[in-house]
Each structure stands twice: as C-alpha cells, then as structure tokens.
Length: 146
Image (cartoon, rainbow, N blue to C red):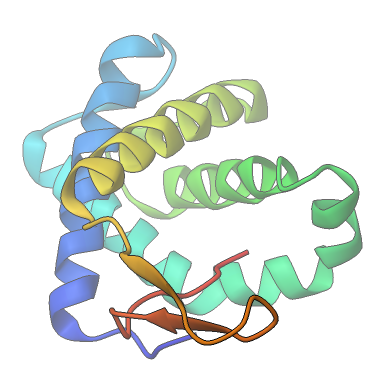
C-alpha cells in the first residue's frame, strides 16, 4: 500500500467532506453546527482513515473476509461514531445512525472515486505460437486493493 501524500490526504478529506454533508442531510439524527464543523469532521475522518483504519482492518480481517468486505462499513461506522464523540458541534447519537451515515459516506466516496480515477489499461499481446503469451500493464498504478 503506497504511503499517503499531502495531496491524497486533502483529496480524501474533500471527498469525506462531501460525504459528511450528504450524511447530515440524509440521516436526520446526525447534526452539525456549521460548515466549519463539517470540515473539521472530514479532516478527523481522513486522519482516522490513515492511522486507525488499517489497524482496525488488520485486527478484524477474518470478519472482513467472512463478510466479503462489508465489515469495512462497520469499521467506518465506528470511526464516524468516534468522530461524533471527539468533535464538538457534531452529533452522532447512536451507532445505528453512524452505520447509516457511514454507508452514505462510503457510497459518495465510491461514486466520486469512480468518476475521478482513471480506468486501468491492460494490453495483452500474443506472439509466436499459441502457448506463448505475454501480459503487460501499461499503467504502474494498476494495483489490486482489498
């Protein structure tokens, strides 16, 4: 996994900002006092995603594998609930609302990342006999991320 840079951290924080705005609009119990509070929550969540989330995923890896990756949403809900406890002016009253908010934030992040990320280009070349095949990737960014 590549080390996060300041550029990717800010991009992820901006995507989380959009997701947190959507979650506060769509999930009635989640409340924020101001736009500054939402920005602070997005920065806290981006920091959690860099520091805490890999540790939590590592310890919950059997559960994440057993649920085919859906356990990540539970981890995101825990991080959102924790952000609600730490950031003054941001209220996440229950774990159920945190779970719904985390689902909305994840869907927003998925949509934005699908829109922004370039599609990997893979080229397959056949040469010689049918038994000799070469597979070559064009982009060095092609990574399988679980």
